[in-house]
View 1: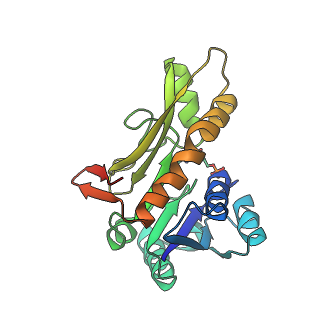
View 2: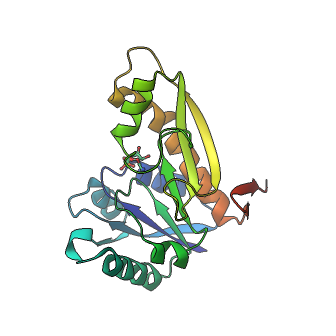
Length: 208
Ligand code: GAR
């Protein structure tokens, strides 16, 4: 059984989707063993507690440098014996140390169809604001492995979502979450836990 550690910063609806998937028996091969938050007030922590999942808080601002933070986060994740790390709305940048310690074992959910509306500065509502400004008719979500390029690692799953005229960033965010994020993130995690994702350079092969 693979140990899944979920990193969060906010509301935790993607964490909830993972917890629900686990409850429905859809995460065979894995179990959510710990939720780590960058924010002590994140509602995601409550969701974890309500479901009897161990929690930890680690804040970037408690460390003098990115290196020290990275070192501490790597030690925390290794101490939890994590097989898979899931970034579910985790808003703190990961440094090289964590990324190389868990190569192709960190999955992120991004609220757009990468390579659109991604990279540094594109997170949360900002992503949807930019999609609406550009006037795209289709957006969506991407589950991908994390490498040293921001939002640049191998793509695992993507799902498209329609943009409607008059959408606000909040309305579009909700539609992208409901129709794409909450579906493809648990699916990507399940595939990983069943050893069904094979990485070839920057591409993935789904063994189904
Ligand atoms: C989600 O939309 C997630 O895709 C996004 O933040 C939101 C977190 O919501 N992540 C990023 O923008 C990362 N670049 P949640 O806390 O309710 O899951």
